[in-house]
Image 1 (cartoon, one colour):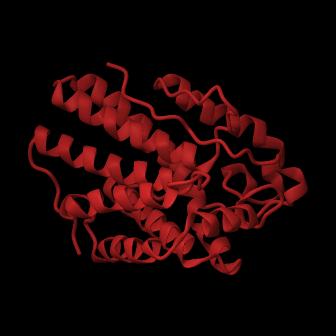
Image 2 (cartoon, helix red, strand yellow; image 1 turned 90 degrees about the horizontal axis):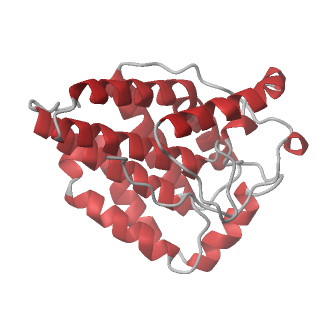
Length: 249
């Protein structure tokens, strides 16, 4: 089903805001499930459904969102927390860190890749929480950043700062092409292989299809990474989540 593209600057900005909400919701879903986590995701998902036409340009994405809401209605914070520990932390099979994926040649470049991701964050005013900060390649952090970049694009369009818009747009596309768009497919497959509960499988399905829609929108084809690096070579995960960020005016 073809995507309906916005026709004016304001329409384009509104479209960006709604996509930003989608990726903010995905980031929340992959944070550690403290008390009330399920309700937070359901509330955010329900808001997304209200703007479904603009945020879901494919039937598959629309179906994924509907399925997500149905499945998470029957989940519990305690079940999600147990599965989060089994699937995502330490030497678990489905690391939430980008640099946990790839072949052995990626090891030598891991510090460089982390520095590159941090460089994106620094360039566009994104800061990790100072309380139990996670590594910059953690999935929720990358999704939060991508959401922020969409927000920044919307702001520059609303304020008619078109040169600034072009800079932020270029950074958004580069980050998706060089980082976020490269590894979510392997991550999603690992979740399926690890018999993750439906709550996390539906969340990952929505994530993967959302990334694919973004790549088509920006006309890019990221070089995908495959496989999981040996767990003992990956640093232990933290339970922290990125703090809320707002565009710098």
